[in-house]
Amino acid sequence: SDCLGLSDAGHLTIGGADTLMLAEKYGTPLYVMDEDNIRENCRLYKKSIDKYYDGRGLVTYASKAFCCKEICRVAADEGLGLDVVSAGELYTARQADFPMEKIFFHGNNKTIEELSMALSYGVGRIVVDNLTELEILNTLARSLNRKANVFFRIKPGIDAHTHDFVRTGQIDSKFGLALETGEALAAVKEAISFENICLKGIHCHIGSQIFDIEPFEHAAQVMLGFIAQVKTETGYEIEELNLGGGFGIKYITEHDPVEYDRYMQRVAVTVDDTCKELGIRRPFIVIEPGRSIAGPAGITLYTVGAVKEIPHVRTYVSIDGGMTDNPRYALYHSEYECLVASRAGEPREKTVTIAGKCCESGDLIGEGMRIQEVKPGDVVAVLATGAYNYSMSSNYNRIPKPAIVFVKGGKDRLVVKRETLEDVIRNDL
Ligand code: LLP
Image (cartoon, rainbow, N blue to C red; front, side):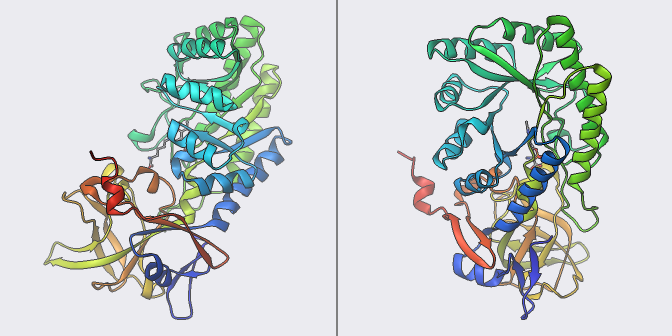
């Protein structure tokens, strides 16, 4: 990735900082993110959306990919909105002084407490998943003498080719309202009739780590078709359309780099053509990338313990982290690249399994991974771990969570402290 380099000594660098120095200074396991890379990713999307929709669009960062106060500050500073899905993410944003009117609050089962919190914070848009939620929200908003600005989550019925666990657009999904059964239209009619609800837009998200552009174009057509149908049947004009996130990133060398500007351009052309065909005004367009903003900017540094060779079978390289800081191999068999930080420029001639320290065999970072000569005590870097690693980390086996360091122009700063053993027992009575 763009943020990685080699020092004169042949050490791996990120954002201009020596990874061995960072491992020494902060300890391992350690998440390191290149702030300039995050900002660059934000700017690419913002530039595209401004260009293709004449400034009538908004990029919101899907904070589930990686959420802490500092990234909320960075996203705000870059002029992005924010997608949150829980009281925890919303609270983080608020504590980082994120502009509340630029927040989209998602989730298929927001609690009453979460909905009240969103209303009292003045969150910009609440993305309503179902009729139960709509009714609760209307009642809550009435009691606060407010109008809630809402979106509806819609299932466009599109099957994107990605892992089953991250597909969301198809009919059999726990998320959102179906089009073909009339569920979505009925919900829209109800929303229009509610005093304390203001229906602003509709939303879809077809899945994550998607490389094809067609499913995004198709989703846009379906959603615009629904906007046209609503207009014909009720006279109501839905003015905003959120097309979700899901743009794929390059995890391994064999993946082709993705040009996000091409996605944006092709979807924008489809949006314009479809609006013309349907005779509707182009809605305000929102997208919500998460992985592609945070993922490529991050790496995780580990220290190697034992190296265990099982003759004719495989070599296990044990590290001081694992599924607690990166559960993605255990969950999805995700692929990653790794390097020995001190020999990053040398060819990767070994094939190994990187194993974590948890008490279960599935605790692996990867199998058949190419790496340089590796010995106990070496620092290993796993690449492209900026998204869905820290945010999905756990305290399994009562392992404290790693620290997070941001690097900018070669300068490092701690943004999340390493958990201590005291933190691990903090809530025990
Ligand atoms: N919007 C909605 C409504 C979403 O559900 C998601 C992701 C996004 C936006 C952001 O998608 P992205 O641009 O990051 O692909 N834990 C899985 C990924 C789950 C994605 C969940 N929703 C993983 O580690 O691959």
